[in-house]
Length: 127
Image 1 (cartoon, rainbow, N blue to C red):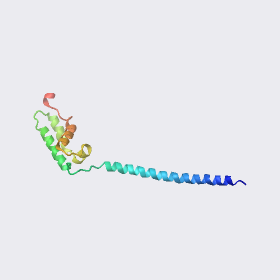
Image 2: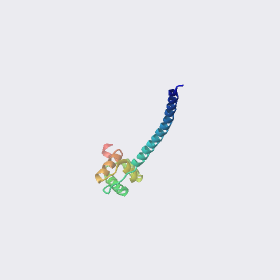
Image 3: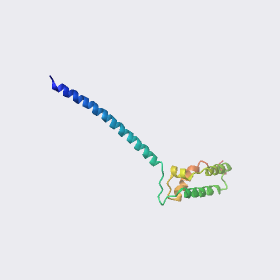
Image 4: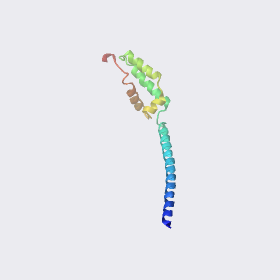
C-alpha cells in the first residue's frame, strides 16, 4: 500500500480548494479596485474652490464684463454681436469653471473667455 499517493491526492485537492478561494479573493479585489476607480473619477468631477478662487457668481460677473467690452467695439459685425449675446444668454458659470477653471484672477477668466469667444469675433474691416 502506498501512502504517498494518498497524501499526494490530498494535497492536489487542497490546491484546487485554495485555487477556488484565490479566485474568489481575486474577484473581490478586482471589484473593489473597479469601485475605487469609479469613485476616484467621481471625485475628480467635482471642483473645489479655495478662498482665493472666484465662485460661480464672480465668474459670471467677470464674463459679463468681458463680453460688455467686446460688444462696446463699434466695428464688431452684427452677426458676431448676435453670436456672443446668444452665448452669454446660455452661459453657465459652474460649467465654465469645471471646463476652464478654477480661476484665481480676472486675467485667467479673461483668457478663458477669449478662448471661448475668439471664433465668434469678427470685425467689419475683416470682411
